[in-house]
Image (tube, rainbow, N blue to C red; front, side):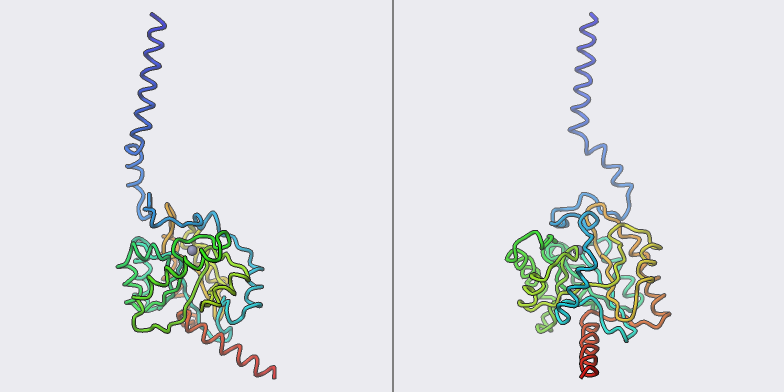
Length: 291
Ligand SMILES: [Zn+2]
């Protein structure tokens, strides 16, 4: 008798466990719905091939400084240090959660920025992509699937960039001779790759102020990271879309405050093409004074 009860309990337990496994999604759903604004269970199109920014980032600053010295015309991390101008840049978009909110802020503040676009995301969110262009922001290339280009072949990296270039082209019907700008995912790049992309006509655009918003920081933290490090000619890095569960609401909330604070200091907001022109002007003048 005792043994029969034991067996029965075991069977009930097994059935219950099986039910839990099969119906796991039923138990997950309410949790998902209670979280607002943070992308969950994103489609494959939103996947970052090299992994989430928060797990992969951490490129040594020293190496960036080396690349600036080695390739002053190819590798751009800031503009003219005498001009009170800054460039806001937003990586990893578009999406339909954070990118539209950022566009709303930029429109409200009458500021133009530069978006480094992931090709496959632009394909999935063509309306948001169109809005970026219609509202006169500048667009750069951030690969098709966001791989770490140090971990794939040069040929594969090139295909990632060219495929995105093809997708961006129709958005630039009227300016076929625009400057081609490439920002490497995770900021991961070496001299060989800088030269390689330089040879196929790209400027590599880095930054000198990292908001660190990819860590899911609060608005206050994002604002502090930007305002405490900004100088004349700064290129500022933020993100306009995240990976699964990545929360950029702090970054979005900080944006109007960052813009107001910098405007109050007398800074002008420009796109990357403009800040690059200033930087080249500064180089020329430096060379002239050396003569
Ligand atoms: Zn990125």
